[in-house]
Image 1 (cartoon, helix red, strand yellow):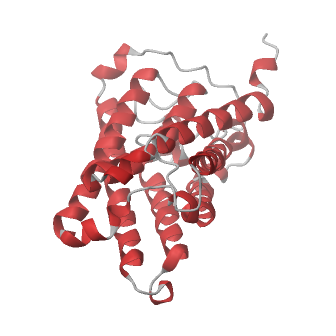
Image 2 (image 1 turned 120 degrees about the vertical axis):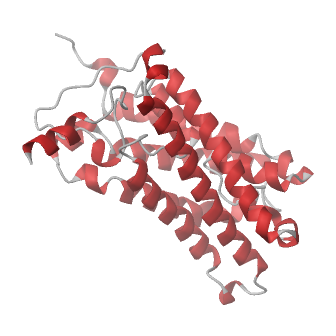
Length: 286
């Protein structure tokens, strides 16, 4: 058992996340601030763990789009929201899938499944730029493939029902949509930072195991609040994948909102957690 626990604590990969999500997070009772990740880490490119992590991000985002787009289309197809799962069901589909997929991939890639999350962790120096760019590419490819599979067996229904594409709803301005995406992503990324905080994990050993739960619940709550405004993006890969496969002009008109908003929200969450909550720039060094 001691050997197994040691493997979990140290991780099986040579080039692991500086602060992974979930069960692979640091659990030492004697907390030590992890060193910031280097901007470039060429050795990663020669490690199977690096490529395996990217594949895990691809597969997780693929499954995420497959389930959630089908759920959205099922609700849109129904003549009455009371006859289907409704907005609450859509929110549960998104939040539940994030909970499950973060739990499954945390020990492999960190369970980002979202370019905005990856961007926030990059700003906090939790992973290298090389890994961050690779993750974002694989997340976007996974989202495109997930949406394309849905279109593959839905055919005409996919086109008629909107393909799960994000757009700013009628009655709301682009500024409203941008604000909703910024705040929604801030909630998500702030939750990610808090749920995976290495210092908190050192104090409360149960936190790493429970980390996927608050992250998924944050996604659920944000969807409840912002589905009526933008359909809820807070994940540029999700928005891009649906837009590419649906490929209608109105799906592209607001696409910038679903990239700029989440990235701003993620940056604000990273700054808030690192500077205000953790006060890392103000800590004295020995």
